[in-house]
Image (tube, rainbow, N blue to C red; front, side, top):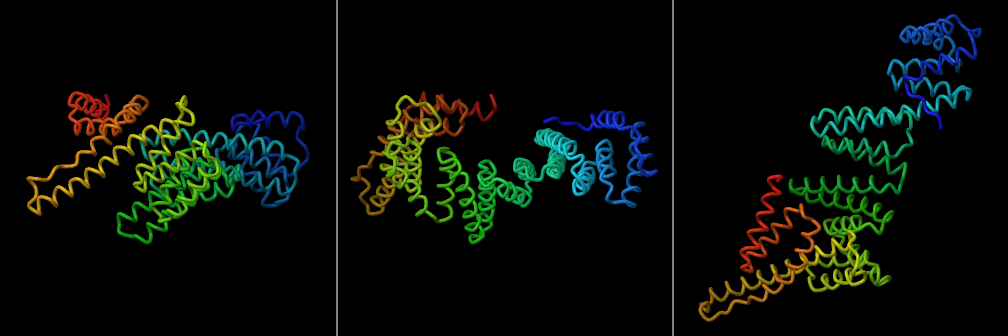
Length: 396
């Protein structure tokens, strides 16, 4: 499909007049044609406005008005003139649609450029939003443009604007995964804010909206681990554990060799502090395809380390409670502390170390390793882990 940029419209018009000559028409239209060839676009617009005020059924005048307004960078007004022309006749439909598409692309690109600058100067986010809104006027059915506008709204912390744009994006494309995922993230963020403000009812409603959005993403891409883990978390936070259990367990029952299902079930069980059962599922992920090094394998490896570590922490907490109770009962001298939690810490280490080989820049992972090494008296390794974490935090 041929596309015309605004700068090419003059050439287009020059060609148009060369081929057609000065046809009979009103004085206003004739004057406008002359002004266009002389690149006096302000005067051309003035003449064409007079013409359409007298004869609003003049398709050619509306078409020329659209062209002139592009040169004047009055893009929204240009689109209005184009729409008037199309409502009257399809004579210039091909040219109009080509120009609309070209301008949509130009405005979208300028919006993306402004958004990238917004990371340094936040006022550019407003510029980006304006560009995306203009792009939408030319191609109103573009779900991607509404999504881009939502991203810019979200970046400037205009959450209501982000939600409105995302709702329209999903109306245009009900399986738009990126839009659904961002919608879930926005609702989740708002839920956290409400929870901090002690608005429990508002937080619960927002968490449920978050789950609904993540369900759209999961339904469209069920093999994406990010989608299913986000959905499980939103179900948990919105007190819909039954849905999380049904989602994960039924998946494993139906297809035991499905690594995604095993992984999801393991994550769910881990959130329920069912450490032994969670570890069984996560190990199955690795056993099904031992040679795999993909994202699922990497995440399963990390969560295995977390599972053993959290299991050990839970056991230590219980051990500390028993020790404290013995002290209060006057049996401290005869009480023998249960150190079995250390075995769980030891079992966590190889999984966390393998994860660190992949996620070398994960500060929290190195901090976790440092703490585990410290508890187990592995001084040298602890120092090295904390040193790496410190370097990452300093940006070295």
